[in-house]
Length: 170
Ligand code: RP5
Image 1 (cartoon, rainbow, N blue to C red):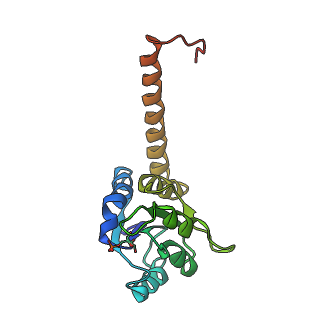
Image 2 (cartoon, rainbow, N blue to C red):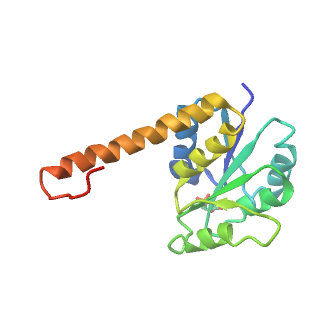
Image 3 (cartoon, rainbow, N blue to C red):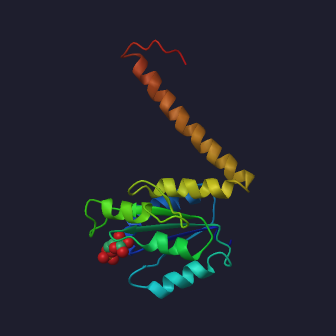
């Protein structure tokens, strides 16, 4: 099946974080591809990947990088596909802020939808929601997932009832 979401990362050392995006997208039955594309070490590969992404059938790109994280922004500067950026706290990060700010603070005209530090799972869910706009099955799968989240919280609410007074009855 043609991948709909491309997951790229600056290094294979980012995989332990980015795996979560792949996992949730596969849980939603969305075909993905995953590879390493480095803005600094393989700049021409990055340009080629971003240039060909749309014609290869991708609908969304998730790009994760740590430190001086130029990958998501540079990909967004080349393609018109939506780009979701995942800041990663990596071995060369100063507490992750370098990556967060590099990905978040894009100039006007070139947006990157930036998720929280290391939040690759949320990047996957957001990508699925974008795919779900035009795909009823995906949209239903996300709805089921969110219902499950709600049920988990309500179970915890029940668990607290025996221990604490709660005047709120919903
Ligand atoms: C970034 O540098 C990568 O995205 C990674 O987070 C970080 C460290 O890369 P390695 O030195 O582990 O390959 O470009």
